[in-house]
Length: 620
Ligand SMILES: *[C@@H]1O[C@H](CO)[C@@H](O)[C@H](O)[C@H]1NC(C)=O
Ligand SMILES: *[C@@H]1O[C@H](CO)[C@@H](O)[C@H](O)[C@H]1NC(C)=O
Ligand SMILES: *[C@@H]1O[C@H](CO)[C@@H](O)[C@H](O)[C@H]1NC(C)=O
Ligand SMILES: *[C@@H]1O[C@H](CO)[C@@H](O)[C@H](O)[C@H]1NC(C)=O
Ligand SMILES: *[C@@H]1O[C@H](CO)[C@@H](O)[C@H](O)[C@H]1NC(C)=O
Ligand SMILES: *[C@@H]1O[C@H](CO)[C@@H](O)[C@H](O)[C@H]1NC(C)=O
Ligand SMILES: *[C@@H]1O[C@H](CO)[C@@H](O)[C@H](O)[C@H]1NC(C)=O
Ligand SMILES: *[C@@H]1O[C@H](CO)[C@@H](O)[C@H](O)[C@H]1NC(C)=O
Ligand SMILES: *[C@@H]1O[C@H](CO)[C@@H](O)[C@H](O)[C@H]1NC(C)=O
Ligand SMILES: *[C@@H]1O[C@H](CO)[C@@H](O)[C@H](O)[C@H]1NC(C)=O
Ligand SMILES: *[C@@H]1O[C@H](CO)[C@@H](O)[C@H](O)[C@H]1NC(C)=O
Ligand SMILES: *[C@@H]1O[C@H](CO)[C@@H](O)[C@H](O)[C@H]1NC(C)=O
Image (cartoon, rainbow, N blue to C red):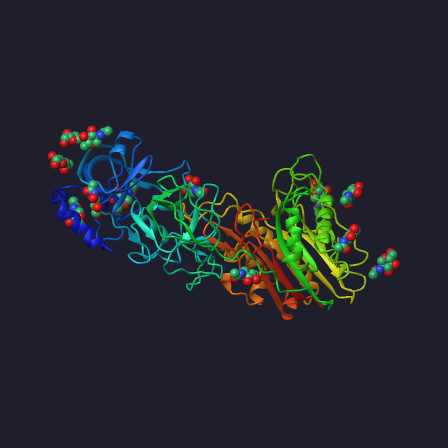
């Protein structure tokens, strides 16, 4: 491989006149923005390194200052100009230096580019461009995105948008910060050796990869999980990059989490919120992971004191959803029909039709029947939910999503003589007439009028009794969604975690409720589970629960990189959580995340965007 030094000397040797001209490294400079932004420069020289329908890229001599990229995009809609430049041509041109946003999103980083090229002179043809081989010539940092992600939770620190990359325009520290690293390669031709896909492609055929370089958070499937770094700050996995549409018009292959691909060579470009590599041509798939997902090993037991728990967000489930029989089959074949299943996103009987329907008894009985059939009539679940007030709990309009329980009535049932709560009733823990802790409404909702639950789901609380007379509490939670959060690679630092304050308030309300139970009975068995819509590493959100409960994954000793139930962009992440009270934790907790959806072959083949989890605990 030709080194960058050789490339540089090649330039100087071949074009003695070049020293009088301006180098691309000077235009790019050592900071996020160009020192020449807005200026028209003459005699910019470089070799055409890549080309597409509205741009070509130039490579100049590299500088010893790795902060200054030696590549740049030349934007032009002129077919004449594009028709007259060929990869390998050494040219000189005049152009205006622009700091450009690829979309109307003001949170995008600027890209330094050359606009309105004129006076294009061909100096020679058929020059060789040597890409920077990532992992060999330069390697991305693996922990932090930006020096501006300050605070104990780093990129997940709250509040976000305390500072802006482009306003700060710091000089780059590519060895330490991911955004600085990718910015220092903006416009250059790079090679990703031995790429591994970190997710399914999006609807544009784009997908995240890591290459053959040092990574952190690597899980057994080949993905990268969000973890806490050795510096006790959440690790942002900046050593990843999105592969965009190939420049030559070929189509990227279908990929899945863990697919390996042929080497990718392309140019680095910030667009649509992220640093991309636009490959010169589409890579090919080398290997696919094993798409046969093993079932949980956590089987239900005869012992009435030992219960298995399923937890599954089944994504806008209506009676007619095509995914309903698939989910029912998964609950049988992969979750092994747990004694109780905490479901989230059960829609009302009319699904997303906005007709005032709030009851979900058809949705839930259809699900229970489908499971009965899938289990060969072996499992006959009962179910339990509380209808929301129409249109008050967020989610898909008209769907009235809510949490629900499926449970095996042979294993346990609601505490006898309970009074079910309605949508607007707040259940409370009290000492009942037999001296036990009881709920005023069972099942019930936690303080449904509290602003913490505005336009969001209210937790579903239940109090159960085993045939042996032992009792336990469950709380099924579905936190406000993160959608609308700003890009992990955007201008706002730390990134904006939308509605994180509401999610924190929700966890606080749940913690207060659990505390009200434990205050009356410190040995009460309490299980809180569901889709919290937040990562464990956003520690500020979970702080209220920390003194009261234990996260099941931690008690069970699940390796941190295997704690995930969701895959989004470059990260395998844990949005779904199970927490247990001390009395449950001491009895031992087992947990498995069953990747029936995110280990599958295609995005469309998933039954839900979340993976389910199974736990086994003692409640007596
Ligand atoms: C361009 O870069 C080359 C190689 O680093 C260097 O020798 C030359 O002085 C630079 N020219 C300018 C105008 O900076
Ligand atoms: C950004 O920083 C570079 C290098 O320090 C400087 O030349 C340029 O003028 C700065 N641009 C802005 C808009 O601050
Ligand atoms: C650009 O190159 C031309 C031809 O070599 C020269 O006459 C002119 O002075 C150069 N312009 C600048 C700004 O260096
Ligand atoms: C392409 O460039 C050559 C050399 O500069 C010039 O003679 C020719 O007219 C150009 N062709 C077009 C289509 O612009
Ligand atoms: C193009 O080159 C000519 C001759 O060197 C020069 O007079 C003119 O200013 C240049 N135009 C631009 C936009 O640089
Ligand atoms: C370009 O270089 C290759 C060898 O690197 C040679 O085979 C080819 O003939 C050259 N083409 C032109 C147009 O000079
Ligand atoms: C961040 O704050 C700035 C004001 O300082 C505002 O203009 C921008 O829209 C905010 N960005 C996000 C993503 O909220
Ligand atoms: C794929 O995984 C399944 C489930 O773990 C296993 O039974 C099977 O042997 C695996 N197939 C291969 C080819 O490794
Ligand atoms: C649903 O509830 C309605 C009203 O209580 C009842 O008429 C209907 O039979 C129920 N359907 C199912 C499938 O349970
Ligand atoms: C399951 O039960 C249904 C009636 O509810 C019956 O028709 C069917 O034959 C049973 N299937 C099996 C496998 O037992
Ligand atoms: C439930 O209520 C019935 C009638 O009100 C009563 O006979 C029974 O003892 C109660 N059971 C319990 C466990 O409180
Ligand atoms: C919630 O507000 C409604 C009126 O909007 C009221 O009827 C209900 O009693 C309130 N619930 C509680 C627990 O205060």
